[in-house]
Amino acid sequence: MKKAVRKTPSPAPSASRPAPAPRGRPKVRSDALVADATAAAAVAAEDAETRIYQSVVSGVMGQRLLPGTKLPEAALCELFDVGRGVVQKALQRLAHDHVVELRPNRGAIVAMPTREEVDKLFEARRVLEAAILPLVAKSATKADFAMLRRQLREEHQAMHSAPQTEWARLASTFHLTLGELSGNPLLARYLTEIISRCALVVAIFQPPGNAACEHDEHARVVDYLEAGKIKEAVAEMDAHLRDLESHIQLVEDQTELSLADMLGLS
Image 1 (tube, rainbow, N blue to C red):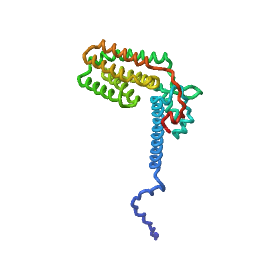
Image 2 (image 1 turned 90 degrees about the vertical axis):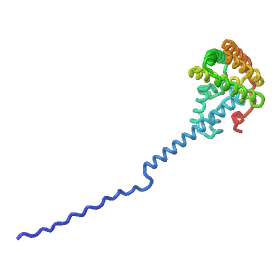
Image 3 (image 1 turned 180 degrees about the vertical axis):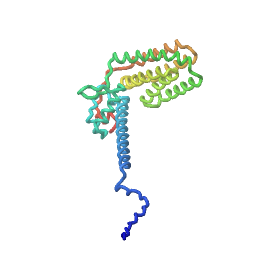
């Protein structure tokens, strides 16, 4: 007689349960926090770099930082409470825009253009603006000339009430607007680069008091362009730029100021 075999019942299938959540914050969240912190640090460094850049440009335009002034990295780090990497990036931007000179193993100084460099700069500007004016006369509309007239009125007001730096900005804007009205973006871009360099040279080396003459010359250029007198407009612009260059004095006395004073930080 066979013995009955007792079968063990199979366990009932259990309902699937979610895996237990890992302890602590998920890794993806940690990575996101690291990325956010890195991005924030990058923005802070970029902001600091821009502050250094703008402070140096402002000091140069305001004739506090004169040509040849030393810009030691260590001093800039202390003044702006940043590391050398941020300072070096700011100085590289300034060198690219010809505001400072980077000298190997000797550090940075405010740029010191020579007379020959200034002559070449204004020679290039005269050629470029002479090429732009006929294009403006050909393509400018009544609305464009009305805009130029509004700019001239702003110039006139600034000439009597605004600081020299504001007048210089408006004077540069007039020329930049002519570049835009030429309809040639390449010419406009080249003019922007040249004018930015000229503006620094003029701000540093030109004595105040010539604004009235410059404004009148701007107005005559617009008069000639609107009347279709291209040769006269080109001749007026050429004379205007030569007169602007003639007032540049490359020798300046260095006033005794601290670097913080020169950068407008004190």
